[in-house]
Amino acid sequence: MTQDQQQPDAPCGIFITFEGGEGAGKTTHIRFLSEALERHGREVVRLREPGGTVIGEQLRGVLLDPRNTALSDEAELLLYEAARAQIVSEVVRPALERGAVVLCDRFTDSTVAYQGYGRGLSREFVDEANAFACQGIVPDRTILLVAGSDARTGLARATHRGADRLERAGEGFHARVNDAFLEIARDDPERVRVVASDRRKSRTAAAVFAELSDLFPWMEGLDESDPAFFGRLDAKRSRVRA
Image (cartoon, rainbow, N blue to C red; front, side, top):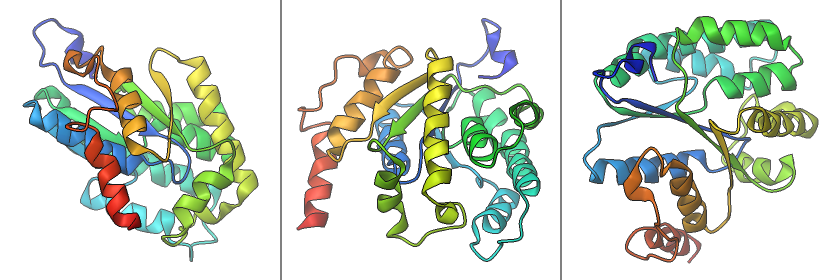
């Protein structure tokens, strides 16, 4: 949501972010939600952080490259905020102003969790940096996907594809990150909705849709057992396992 959209005649853009530790399934469920929204006639803009712009993708390469072991915690934070400031001004704000639904894989909560709690940087400084980069943009809803009871569950899912610099930070770091996400959700339950990332993807997707049904009324009452809607998620998984 932008500050301008608080006016009654403003376009109804909606900003939804997905958060969670490594391997929580954010990409899968953003893609499924995007496809469903487009079938219902909404313009959808899918983004990831860091990234989403030419400059942002260049910064992503620096931030996630496992060879960049000398990158300081402070420099890491500022690079994330630089990528965020660019994507907000270049993509997010224009999309919301024309009434699109913006789905973003990570946003400010990840910075609080990873750089604030994980790296141990000042929460006050992280919050100020986030506010400066966001230029008044605040998510309407955040879906926090939680994979398992400890950091190892999500890391096991993520690292099979090749660990990036953050995924190599160790279990202690990722345990602090996961705890931070849950604390953020407890502090802001209206915006942040916690969804268990079940291995049965249809179950997770149905829970995500339930947490968004106040924003999209057609989602209300959808059931995971509906094969015409959620069943194909599990069908895809079965084909891969076969």
